[in-house]
Every structure is written in structure tokens, then in C-alpha cells.
Length: 53
Image (cartoon, rainbow, N blue to C red; front, side):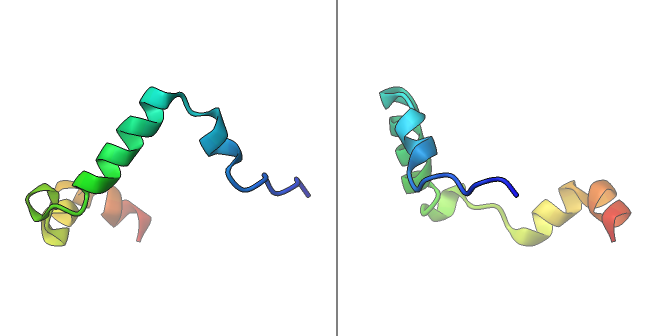
């Protein structure tokens, strides 16, 4: 069985630009205007969702 990666291993490999992009995306994900309704997502991806059920 493969070893579990050390905590923070991936984070430590990110460039400062990647970290900034990730932090910005995370912060923006809490803004209601950036959210997509669950029903809209299901409608947009119905052909893939239906094939996995």
C-alpha cells in the first residue's frame, strides 16, 4: 500500500503565484454571486450524471 503523503507536501510545491490564485479562488467561492444553483449544475451535466446512476 502506498504511503500517505506528508501533510502540506503539495502546498509546499506550489509557486507563490499558484498559492495566490488558490487563495483568491477560495475567498471568491464564498461570494453568493459566484455560486451556481445545484439544479442548474445538474441540468448542465445531466447527460453525464444520468449515465453514472
